[in-house]
Every structure is written in C-alpha cells, then in structure tokens.
Length: 356
Image (cartoon, rainbow, N blue to C red; front, side):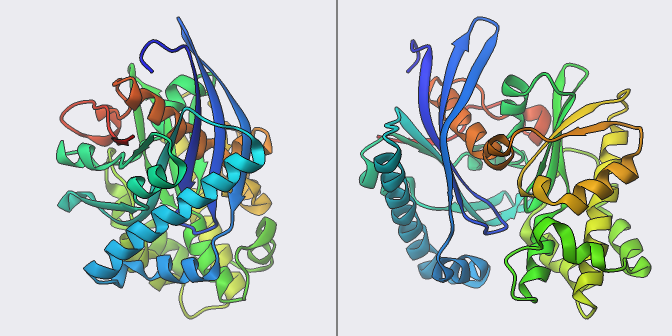
C-alpha cells in the first residue's frame, strides 16, 4: 500500500458504552498537503443481549473465559463485516478493528481489547490491522487516546475535536504538538442509570432534564483526584466503576442522570477554557452529540468562551470508526499513527498488528 494514493478501508469500533458495533467503509486519498476522506457506507450493528451480558461482566471473567471471548468476538465481528460487505458491495483493501476494551490500566502497562484479528481475517479473507494500543504502553505511554492523529489530519479546520462516547475526550494543537486526553465520563454512567429504568439510553436527555442535580454529589464528582492530573491522562471503566458509579447510586434516577449530565458538561467546559484559545470552534462527535440536553448544558456552561459544532449525523456517529480506518492505513504504510505528545510515550510509533 506504500505507493497507493487511494485507500478503501473498513473501520470497526466497539465502544465502552456497549451501544453496538460501528462499521464504516471509508475512502482516503493522499494529497501532497494532506488527506481527503469520505464515509461511503456505515451502519451500527446492535449487540445481541448475550454479548451485552458477556461484555458487561468480562472484567470479572477468568483467563480461559476471556480467551474464549476474544476468539468468539473476533468471529462475530468477522461475520458482521462479511454481511456488511455483501449488503453494501463495498469490498475494501483492508479492515482496521479497534476491538472491545475490557481492561485499561496504563499505570500497570495493562490494556486489553478483545476481538481476535486472526478470526476477522479468517472469516473475511482480508488484511486486518488490530491491537493498536499495546506498543504505546510498552513505550511508557497511556495507550490512549489514539484518535488525535486522525483529528490532526482529517479535522484540522477545527480548533479542537471533542468526542462524547462512553468517556468524553478532547484533542487540539498546542505549541506545534497535538495534545489530547480523556476529560471525564460521559455516556457510560448515563447508560448505566438508564438501564435501571429499562432503557438502553436516555433519549435526547429527557429524563435527565426532568430531574434535579444533587449539589453534594455533584461537588464530590467535580472534586475527584483525576481532574487534578495534567495530560497525558486517560480513564478506564475501572476508575469509573470505583469512583463515579458509587456516587450516583441510591438516588432518584432522573436526579442522578441530571447530576451526571451537569458533571460532564462542567468538566468539558473547563477543558475548553484550559485550551486558552480565543473563541475556539470545537467539532463534537460521538453518541453524546445526539443528547440534546447534554449539548444544551455544555453550551450554557461554556457561554461565550467557545462554539460547539455538531457535523452531519454520519460523521457524528462514525468518526471513531473512520479514524481507526485511517490509523490502519498509516500502519500499513509504516507511518506514525500514535503520538507521544498525546500519550506520554518515549517516542511516536506506528502501532497495530497486521494479519494477512
């Protein structure tokens, strides 16, 4: 692929919020001064309840079960991709798969994304790039976030890129270096609270809007030690399960949803102000961009200190899948796709294991 100018890649992303498998068929065209890109076809495959149950409890599984899940999820992803390719007629040059994160503990150089690339390759017969994080951890980095390379090359017209997934993260240029980090929890606690009401998520934030923020709990959340750390830093579901979820237990669900929304919006506004840019334009993607109440609160708390821009729905929903497809292209070209300025590693790297 080194001498090719155009690349057709399927990017696959399974987010921590368990809202499905995002699949995006993308075209990238290399120019002398940058990249053009297009999402050709995209869909989200909802996880069957069996996989939701297995993935949501995977942190407590033993080694044998985790190994079994790694293989079986890879086979499941491979079959989802094969169906997608058959239905859309979009035969790619390669596949780039993030996998599904089970553990992320960079302080122990530990991260695990399951969904075996060997299985995806065996089912589809296509080259597969996966396991994008472990090399960066071996180099002393956080292994996250990885999206900022794509932010720099594909979304450079914005001052910052904000993704509202299970965890909210931000990426921007500062002194000729890309800075990025996980800001705070976003959809993960919201979806967990919604599940107690028998809902997969709080549509448009309506339940949260009907509640009242608990000031004491909000103060406790806003005062957590993570927010005192300087980048590079990243959040894992372990920290959220230990420090965030317990604060939101034993209360009215609408009130806890409102408290969680206010916490997220406050942290995000604070992160934008810390950029110290005059009237920055921030592109907002991820499932949280569809949460009208969350966006309303973010804009209210930020005030005139910046502008949140929500692009078209396909880009909102599939930006991470798009960028992992792009990371796969860079890996195949043996070019840098993980930035030490973002992760804190000892050097930049071209990360990902290639099968096929």
